[in-house]
Length: 134
Image 1 (cartoon, rainbow, N blue to C red):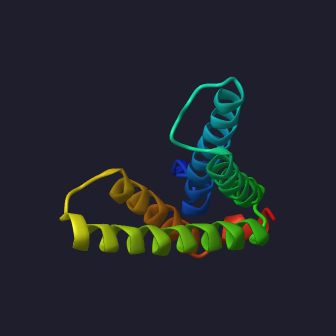
Image 2 (cartoon, rainbow, N blue to C red):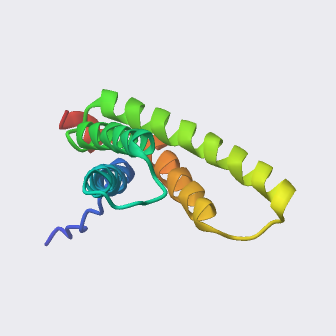
């Protein structure tokens, strides 16, 4: 009798890790590009402090995501912490802004959804295969 082999889908933690890599790389890119453009004399809305904050958050997302992809529990904790803090902060800004300026869908809502998705995927329990390969 031939045994059927089921194709394995990637674990939820690995999907969260790759989403974290994308968010982290984007943060580092935006922070670096902002600093370079400001140093070149171009006037843009984000200043050096904002660029440093965005770049630093990107580094933290990237650190957590890379550690999670390497199947380290510390990476899972870092990514859970980053996404939960950013989701709560974003939700607070959305609520305060919506109460004063009216409710409408915008980029902050998409950022909130992205953080909620990464958080939910990071919170999922590690599979047996995931814990065995650590």
